[in-house]
Image (cartoon, rainbow over all chains, first blue to last red; front, top):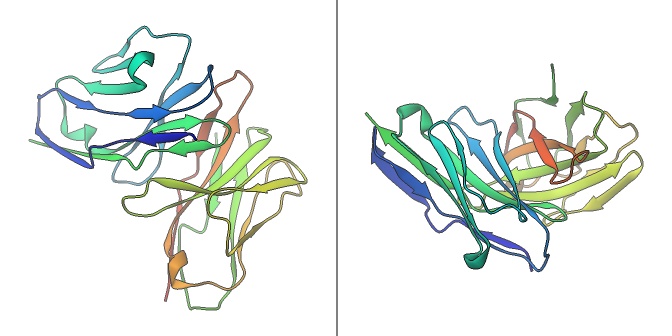
Length: 111
Length: 114
C-alpha cells in the first residue's frame, strides 16, 4: 500500500530557529516522486517541491532544504532561520497513481 | 493567469439539499481531481478524471457525483447533503507533461451542512 506519514502534528518555534518537518512514506514502486505543499492561514495550497526517487541529492532553495533518503523512506523538509511568514500547515505527498497526502504538520513561528 | 477557479468560496446548506461545486481550469490539463480536507486528516481524494468523459472514484466517493464533459470543467455534485460532508473542498488540475505530476489547486470551497 502507498502511505505517507507525518508524525509531527504541530511544531512551535521562535523566529530564527531552524526546524525540520519529517515525512516517511511507503510505496511498492521503484520509481516515484514525492512532493511538499504549503497551506498558509489563507487556505490555499502551494506547491513547494517535487523530487524524483532517482535523485537523492539534497536540494536547497533559499532558507528551505530537503533531505531525501531512500534507505529510510524519508523526505524531510528543513526551514533555516524560520520567519513568522513560514507559519502554515505543510503536507508531504506521494502521487502514485493518485496524490496521497500525509496528515500535515502545523508549524507556528512566533516572533 | 486564472489557473484553477473554484466557486463558491463559502456555502451553507441544510441537510438533504443538493448543490454543485464548480471547478474550472485554463491550463488544458487532462487530469483533474476533487479533495476534501478535514482537521487532522490531510486531504482525501473524492473523485478524479483523466480526461473528458472519464471519471473514477477516489478514497471517499460516497455521497458525491462528478462528470467531465469538457477538459476545462469538473463539477462536484452533492445530491443530498449530510452534516458529515461539512468540510473544505479543493479542486486540483494536474500537469502530467513532465512526469511526477504537479497538482495545482483552487482556492477551496468551505461547505457547512446544518
